[in-house]
Image (cartoon, rainbow, N blue to C red; front, side, top):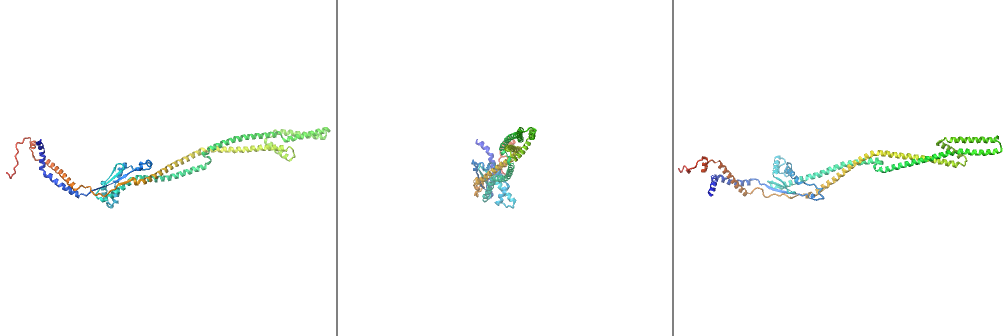
Length: 480
């Protein structure tokens, strides 16, 4: 077993011994080179700062609707890209004077170094860690503080811009909407002022007034018919009781009485009797004529006749004068009542016609009023909604400014690092030994693979396919 193991290891050990210088020289040189290189290499330092993003208002059910979320988990990739952007890093390099502003090449070099050595990591849900690998330790706190400031500004920017933009936009919309609302109010008020008597609110009372007027018209018409019937009755009574006929009959009675007295003393041939007879005949003829004429008179002629009779009666001392005057006054009262009722009826009918016209106009007025009222309601609703949103935006902005100091905190500020990231000399020396060993083994393997010399019998057997009978030792020329 041992012989087999030695037989297998012998070629390897022989190769290592044959190329021992290739193995030892790298092991001696590489530690020295790595130690010297580590001491010559520029030292690198690492510093970091930690930012806490806590949204306490989002956990408060009373303030949840008023607070704007940072959405840190969704925005961290965009913030990382933004912080590594050319514009931001140039701003840092120029403001901190890491490179001259008038030298674009140096600024570009510094920006490239910052871009490759800056790291932005999200730890958990609320912590952001900014790390920087840099060659000058004194510059690192300033760089990280400036980067933290820019990171916080970019983190706040969307919410702040949203609130400020919302307040400005809503304020402008409120001003323009207020003008539209005032115009709608003025148009609605002017329409109501111009049509104050025909508004929908008055339609109920107008319907009641219309019903009352129609009732009054019917009552007035009935009263007018009653007054006309009463007047006609007076005309008929006056026509049937003509005072002239009565006076003629009185004269006829007197003439007949006087005739009877004269006949008692004289004959019909006496001149006095003849005169009385002629007077009596004339009175009877006049009475018959008046009776016939009375039957063909109309109401106006009867009235004119009674007026003449009344005027004649007032001039005469007649005991029947009060009766005639009272009848005439009753007739005049009836006529006056008829004229009054006709005027009242005409007035009521004109009012009813005016109400009817207003009812005809009401449909168009109601349509216009509906349009104006709807326009006003829409403008008022929009204005109220904008006002509510504007007040909510103001409260949201005030809440954001109130909680801003506690919402974003730098809980671990950067400091000047004291220990570089470079390996110490002993670690470089140790690593040089291992690197030299690896390099030496690689060289030995390469040389061994390229070496065509034969060192073992089996190599000869494999190549010649013949057994080795004897080995002749090597004698140098000096020995020979």
